[in-house]
Length: 78
Image 1: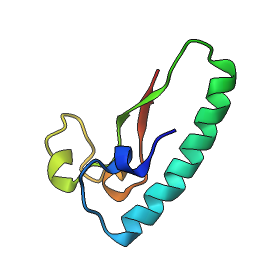
Image 2: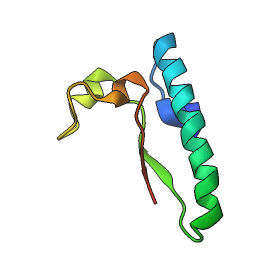
Image 3: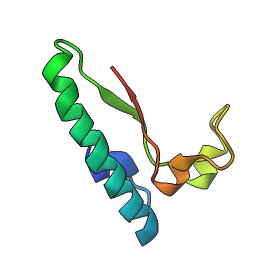
Image 4: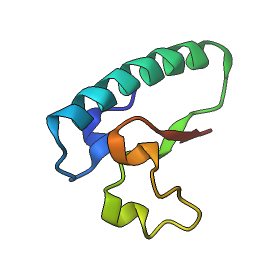
């Protein structure tokens, strides 16, 4: 389960971003519950959550209008 604290880190966000992120995390966590049912021995984890616009600019290859900045994207790896 990925918490909002993990997703946002120490970033302060607008209420709109917080609502979008909670919707995303609800969907992702439901998927991860399903994942745990068939991915024996593989532990998925978040590699990238919310990004402030300033931080997003430092990520090589990040889209200038990345959904990470609006609470609508997450990267997961196993």
